[in-house]
Every structure is written in structure tokens, then in C-alpha cells.
Image (tube, rainbow, N blue to C red; front, side, top):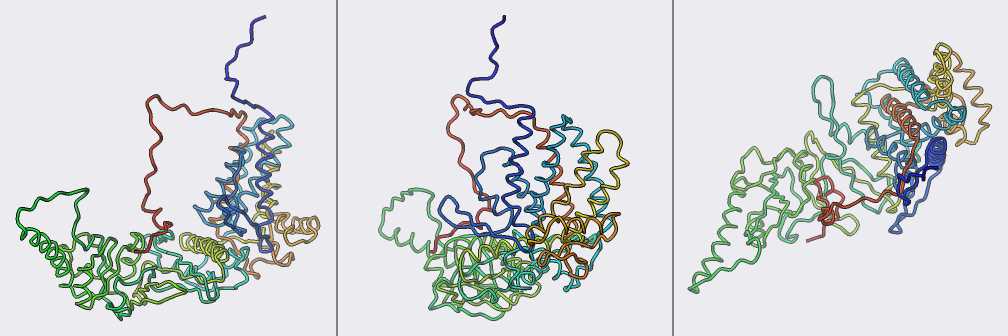
Length: 555
């Protein structure tokens, strides 16, 4: 006998074949079960403790999975799904996971029967193509400018969220904000950049009803010299700078040898003249408000306040960009390059208000602002965080509709229609792929079934009734009302979903299921070897996008 050959190191674990398929399917089902109860309007909330002891209370699928620390690799890739969904379309984060979990669950039977994963995947992809075709068929186009339709749409999207108890409030805020910052690119395309130009400012205190979308921006800063500078200016002329208004210091220790005593005075005088010079260049344009991202020395403050100009210093870059968008100013890097066209005149009012125990500057009443701030008020931090998450979802949905104004029925109606159509088509599928194809059709029923479960109605009866109504692919708009569990017409109840959210959900779920089914080997315990002579890894460089989340220390 030959001695056994050791290929892998002892420290490596290797699992392959059926075992891996089952493990992956179990893991994905476990993830799906965690957030299954958070689907639909009667959903439960989850409370999560994070590492630093903070609490997150939410029912947003993505927010829950983001906080979980998960060991199993397949489960990790499921979590990526909901993140992709959140970044791509902002809604449907729960459905995607539930659907993918169900797709894998129905595939388990075939794996037991020794079907090859590729066969199952091929059937699934065929099912996906047909599902998207069904979506195209039942989608209806709407008019983006009709506010009522938009409202009911955004409402049905966030009807499943915690804030649905505050009625139209969040939906209103979301539509206002997204229509404000929408930019027409021509060709009927609209670009809505939520991340850059909509800032959500959370201020604890007062009640939620006082939240509003400002026609302009606000930021957490006060003027530099509160006593001397005006705190309320009507129709201000605004200059935005990103250079310091102070004397440039040497990079590190600078030694200057002075022979005569007068030279020292000369040096100081030069510094003062330099600052005076800069201020004169700025004051030439008769601004009412000067905002800089960098420092502003006492002397400069003196010159500005003498001229009756208010100044704000050390503003975040991202905030500055928003102000520029809102009031029509251009951010200038050097005072000597200022032009009349760089001065922002579109703002109606600059005002510093005290909210709670902090001062906030408002630049509001802008003409046609292209950036805005959503001011959220609420009783506690947890509440505000949840409202902000819901608002993000609502804005994403409003953005989707602006980009692609097509609707499909909500309440599980779409899934049932897709399921019924696929069941019919499955008889025409050739060969062995027929069974997985049919199973995929049945998997789509997971969504309406979960909705029915969360309402607490008799699931089997309701599902049978719904399947009967949808049998031949007709009654496309009949679904479950998630609040009462009744079977109703979604058109009347105004329960809608955005077309591209649904399409994205189906695509992501099926593609992910195929990917996980194709894994047949897991090798774990690999240590990364450092190249000889390589030091510790490079520190991460912050990008501008991270700066928004930073807490900036007060001056």
C-alpha cells in the first residue's frame, strides 16, 4: 500500500459535496428566519445591542443584518444581499432575503435527489427571465407630477415601517426632499443624489410633527463673534471660501533670526497687513455672510465685524457644498480670485436659532435650491435613528419613481401573479429542468405567505383562496391587505410597489440563490501570509464621503 499523501495542512478544514450544500441552505434559512417577522405592515421590531452597548431598535431588514455578527460564510453573503438592495433601490431589503431563503429551501429537495446544481440554476435563471417579463406586463406607468399618487406610493412603501403611525408625515418629507434636489439630465432622465445633497439633521426634543424640509440648508454652527455680528440677515449675499483667513504659519518649527528690534515689529505688521489685505478683497463684494471651511483669526473677525459682515468658520466640506447648491454661490479657493458671479444671492434669509441647547444656522427661503436639509425632531435618539432610516427608505423609493415611473401591485399580488404564470409555463419546459422551474414558481409565494403569517390569519386558507383567484394569471391586482389580512384589490387600497424595487428583488434573490447552490467546497482555516519585509498594513485614508459622519469638535 502507498502511504497516504497529505495535500492540505492539518490546520485546514475542508468540507465538500452534499454537506456543504446543506450547510449553506441551513445558514441562509436561518438568516431569512431572523428577519421574516419584519415583513409587512404588521411587522415586529427587533432590538439589537451593538458592541459599544448602544441599542438599535428597528425593523429595516438591512439595519438588522448590518448589526449582526455572523460566522457562517454563506450567511454573510446573504447579508451582502440586503446591503446591495439597500444601496441600489433602498427598499425591499427584507423581501430579498426571505425570497432568497425560500429559493434555497425549495432547492434542497432537488439536491437530495442528486440533481446537479447547474441544472437547478439554469431552471432558476429561466424562471427569473419569465418573472421579469410578467412584471413588465402588469406594471402601470404613473405621472410623477401628480402628488397624490406619489404620496400613496411612498406611503405603501413605508407602511411596513415603524413611522407609519405618523401618517403622511414621512412620506411628505421624502417627496419634498427628493423633488427639491432632482436635476433634469435631459432625455427624460432625472438624477437625484440623496447622499450628497440631502442632509438629515436629527435634533432631539419637541415632537415628530415638527419635522420639516427646509427650503435651504441648516448646520450646527454659530457666527464667530455672537455679540458683534448680525444673527439674522434678510436676503444675504453669501461668499463661500475654503481657505483660511489667518496668517499662514510655517509647516513645522520655523526659525527667523532678527537683527534689529524693528524687524520684529515689521514682521507683525506684515502679518496684519496680509490679513487686512485678504479682508479688503472680500469686502469689495459687500457680502453679508462669509463662510469658510478653515480657520478665521481674531484680526480677520475684527475687520469683518467692523464692516457688518457675519462670519462662520470651520464648516464641513460637505455642508459647504450643500450651501453652494442652495444659494447659488461658488466655493472660492483664494480671496484674490473672487468674482461677482461667485457671490450667492438666492437665499432669502440667514438666521441663527437656538434649538435645544445648541445653536444652528439656517440659510433658508432659497429660490429653487438644489440641496436641502430635512430637520427631524423627536423624543429620543433611538426614535430619531429609526425615523431617519425610514426616511432614507422613503426617499429612495421617491427617487426610484422619479427615475422610472412604473408601478406593480404590492401586498404579495405581484408574487402570486408571477407564481401562477410560471406554474402554467412550467408544463412547456423541456426535460429535467421542469421540476426546479416549478419549485421556483412556488418559492415566490413566500412573500404573500409571510405577510399572511404576520397578520395572524389562517395562512393555509388564505393562500389557497389567493391561489384560486390567481390561478390562470388573471386578477393580477388581488393581494393581501397586510393590516387586516383580508384579500382585497390592491388598486383600491392603493398598495403599490415600485417596479424597479420588485425587479431588483427578484434578480438579486435568484442570482444569490444560484451562487450559493454552486458552492460545493468550503476550505477554512487559511492564514494570510505577510510578504517578507512588509510592515503592518497601510492606515486607511478617509474619503470625503466619510466626513459627514464625523463629529467635528467645536472651536
